[in-house]
Image (cartoon, rainbow, N blue to C red; front, side, top):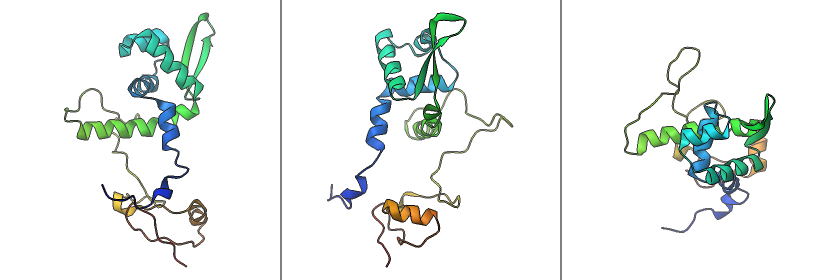
Length: 173
């Protein structure tokens, strides 16, 4: 492995915080179940086949991180419903991208239901990375730029940076 091209590109990166909030495999499976409308502890447990102590721990972690909310059920105060928050719903594209990646690269044939458009029942497209104008971007089409330059670019002010692979873009003066 060669030297890192641009170690400062990772400073302030939110990926470690996101991974810490999500935890591991069970958290992703709980979220998948929540996306599918499961809200009760017993239903998570029976659907996922997860031990009660692990489920309790993961649900608590997802609630503490603001991904799920924990709400008493109005008709039965002894029951608790776990519902996706806006922050949790924002994870839908991440979950879809992970599933699509797994279907492509896991070596296991894709099975089960296919995620489709509710309007016309056609399967959704693969998740892609897109430029500001909607163009799909590949790995070599992206680079890191300073946040103030990115903010300027979003406001259509020149700042610099031609595509230079996934490393740091060189600033133009």
